Length: 244
Ligand SMILES: NC(=O)c1ccc[n+]([C@@H]2O[C@H](COP(=O)([O-])OP(=O)(O)OC[C@H]3O[C@@H](n4cnc5c(N)ncnc54)[C@H](OP(=O)(O)O)[C@@H]3O)[C@@H](O)[C@H]2O)c1
Image 1 (tube, rainbow, N blue to C red):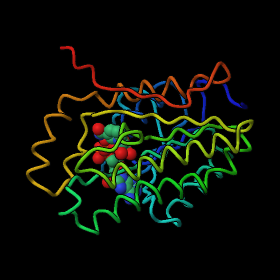
Image 2 (tube, helix red, strand yellow):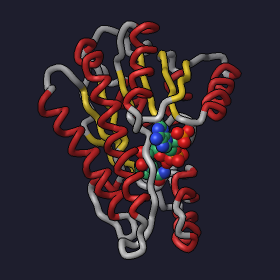
Image 3 (spheres, rainbow, N blue to C red):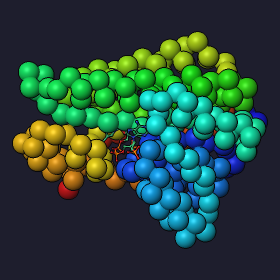
Image 4 (tube, rainbow, N blue to C red):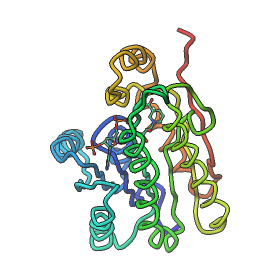
C-alpha cells in the first residue's frame, strides 16, 4: 500500500447513475482522487458539478466498458495524470428481466457484454497498475451472485460470473491484491427501468422503491476500500432492512 487511506487513486465505471454515482460522490468527498466514467457525458458533468458544489473535485471521462479502446483511454488518462491506480470499481452493469421463454436474445447478449465482458475489460487493463500499487478490486455483485431468481436467470448468471472473477483474482493474487465483492439486494436506482417487459417492470418497481439507498451501498464500498491493511472484506452482502 503506497498511499494514505484517504488519498487513493480510484476508478469507478458506470458512475453516471445510481450506485456508481453515489460511490463517486462519497469517495471524492472523503478526499480520494476519483475518475468517474460512463457513456453519458451530460450526466457525468452534472455529477462533477454536484461534487464541486460540495467543495470537492473529481475527474470524468466518457467510457463504454464493452469497447476495449474506450477502456484504454481511461487507462491512459490515469497513467498520465496519476502515474498509477490504487482501486478499481467495475460497477457498470445492466439487467433486463423477462421469463426465459419470452426473453430477447439481444438483451441476454447486452447483459453478458456489459456485466461480464465490461468487467473483464476493466480488470484486465487495470491489473498491471493495481499489481504495482498492491491495489484493490471492488466488484459489484448482487444477491444474484449467490442465488438464482425467476425472470432474471441470465442476469444471475452474469453476477455469478462476477463473483467467480473476484474469487479467482483473490486466489491468484493473494499477496498482491485486495479483492472485494459487494452483493447488494434491491437498491433504489433506475436499474429496473431498463426492463422492456412492461408488466414485470411495474411489478418489480415497488421492490426497488423500497430498496436501500445507493448512498448506503457507497458506505459499504468506502468501508471495504479504507480497511487498508487492517483486514480485507472479501464478500459483503447487504439487504434492505424490511422492519419498518
Ligand atoms: N439496483 C439494484 O438493486 C442492484 C442490486 C445489486 C447489484 N446492482 C448492480 O449495481 C451496479 C450499478 O447498478 P445501478 O443500480 O446503479 O443501476 P443504474 O442506475 O442503471 O446505473 C448503471 C450504470 O451503468 C452504466 N453503464 C451501462 N452500460 C454501460 C456501458 N456499456 N459502459 C459503461 N457504463 C455503462 C450506466 O451509465 P451510462 O448509461 O451513462 O453508460 C450507469 O451509470 C450494476 O452492476 C448492477 O448490476 C444493482
